Length: 361
Image (cartoon, rainbow, N blue to C red; front, top):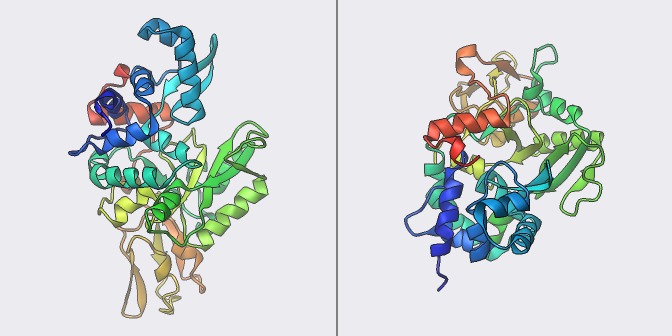
């Protein structure tokens, strides 16, 4: 049996990050890390910071052989276990959250064992991970076709605006749907549906795990996602948005929390809510199959919207053949403030969890 003791410091370090990595009663989090990291890699990763450092800086601070440390850092980046980027003095390395971060980077290599280990952890830890409600991990943005053209909409509320601000676009596999398929519970939705963006032209042209798209191709994929009933979710910031997940409650980790665990605070709803025109509604029920949040019910021949359950995705609106539905902006007191940047989100999340961000910078 694998000795899981070497993985405890890394698990604790990951849980100290704003995203969190809650412990479980039976050590599921340690088994998950043992599948991904060697004991030596775990020991080194447990000493990394969010702020990227060069191998020389890491070695100076943590000790160890410089050549060995450099190679370990390179190997972990290659396997999506830590992050890397340009810093003063060369290439810097830093710790990533487990979710969103390390886990999503395993999309190309996930196998049945990792899928099972993740499911064991997810079922125990997701509830505690979501016990801190603000700011939420993800935020819903409405399908563009569902918002009236004359309504004011902020750039960070529009998937199309996010796409149009970028210079490179790509699509990659949804690890959530892969994971559910590998444990024998596949979903009917397409796997290649997670969208990524960059401000650098051609950023994905040579990427192994990302299929590059044109701007028009990215906009077409957004429309396809809406047509098959998928919900657009992004990281919960106004800026620093580099991906759109096209999600479902049957597979996607974030939205499963709504459907399976009853955690309505898992994802921040959009600033919009569906409204039905009673004079136009013909009670055809075409919209019902497309609401994943049980927000729609037919009552006395008119579709009714539960405002508390509606997340403002607009998917049902797209499938109303008589235009009886439209998204309207919620009152200001129903709209949660959105952190401006990733840094602001981390600061707020760390404060809410009572785990000072300074400890991991």
